[in-house]
Image (cartoon, rainbow, N blue to C red):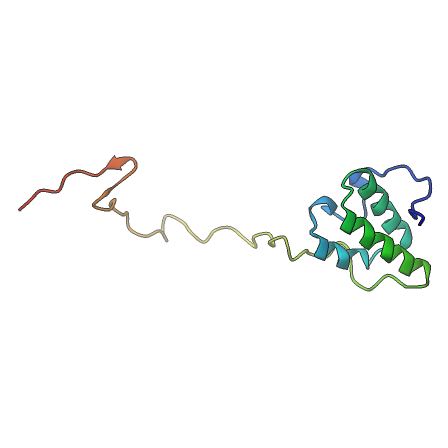
Length: 123
């Protein structure tokens, strides 16, 4: 079985076609590589073989390369689309301000780490 990467030099991480490639779980990676052209996928495979060597990832990429070689087309979508495994960035600042904060709270009767419990008076 050929490795489909030819004699390419190992690409730098910054040159990979998928952002945060090293942090994508296998499920997300399977969907994202379907958007890539053969050349981009070969680049990822070369990088994976040189750095991660994760067998399920390598097998999945080789299978997809075979599909592309046999006439499959990259799927629609963007490999740069937001990833569900990453929370979206906040949309704005915090709505909390001194005017909207609640009243100050006293520590509970059993104390707080910076104010250990005091014996209660018996009455």
